[in-house]
Length: 95
Image (cartoon, rainbow, N blue to C red):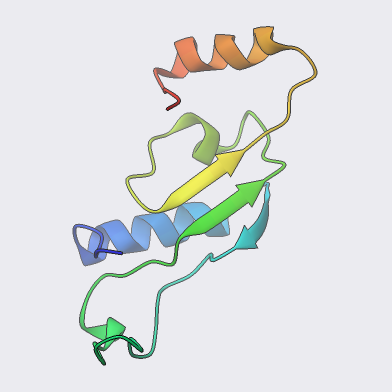
């Protein structure tokens, strides 16, 4: 896992995740401590834990905006039409 681009970007990601309407089921904060692999101190960079957020509302900024960080949001739909409408409206993509 690499560092996000800057301290400002790290703060933006933190703020967006803190304001979410969804439920954080994994991650959700800065990485701290040292790596078991090589002893790297995560406080020496802009590291954010891989984060998964579920049950997010379609009006949530994390649903509408590009995050540019290790954050994925998940929402269940009863029908596909609203899902595809949001993809086209916000210019987001799935892969």
